[in-house]
Image 1 (cartoon, helix red, strand yellow):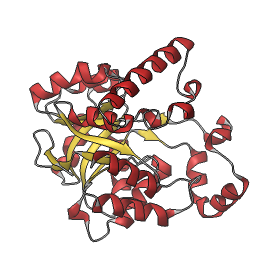
Image 2 (tube, helix red, strand yellow; image 1 turned 90 degrees about the vertical axis):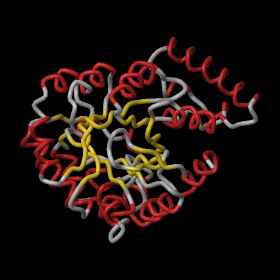
Image 3 (cartoon, one colour; image 1 turned 90 degrees about the horizontal axis):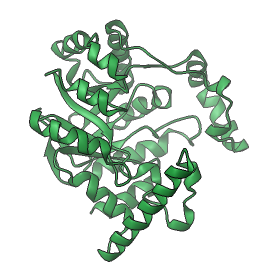
Image 4 (cartoon, helix red, strand yellow; image 1 turned 180 degrees about the vertical axis):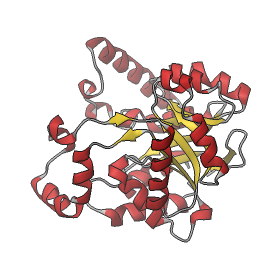
Length: 314
């Protein structure tokens, strides 16, 4: 696994990082398998682990803390803050040990839960909330510092207002955060973040099917020597599945989008075949190979999935 300079920082990050949104959760079988997954990722050369305080109601961070206890200096931890878990989810998190075997036995899926049970997730980027969120992350991760703290999907107007900057600079001076950045859901939020010199990284969607953010943001990032973290590099699994396994209705919001994705997939499958490659390998090579991308995240939830991805990038 190649290692790259992370923008203008002192961090040296593996070219592929592990996206930990799927690590943990009440719909999974428990923590032991995830501990093995995280350790296997590190053994394969991955040193960049991207998580968030709300992933699996905090369990993602907890499992990372357990997996790398005593080996903190061997990894880079990037977490996020800004979302507030609703009371319902906090309550469910406390009952996970009891609920998990019941859910597994009944075969209940996440999408079968009514919205009233899941609750509505709000956002809070106030200095006081961000400081509390970081303290919680540090406890769960069993560490004294985050290598990277990212604002979690803030609206562009929140980024522009900049109320969060003083808090993040304070956390940095206190040694609790080495660097900070913004995980963006829009190009506008990314552009707004770049007006702040303290922002060391932007995270945004980069894949063969969705290249707009890369085209708009990467030239600006290169100019400022700000690191880019590419996420959804396999388009939430769409660029891994065989043609006969894909149901585009699950991925698309309209017939027009469905037709576009079908055309794109046909084109890229043909390109991969002409190069003697798999579609997954072509997709990973694209995301990682873009000039300015420091880390391309792979999102897996099992050891077999990790091994499959590692084979594609070897």
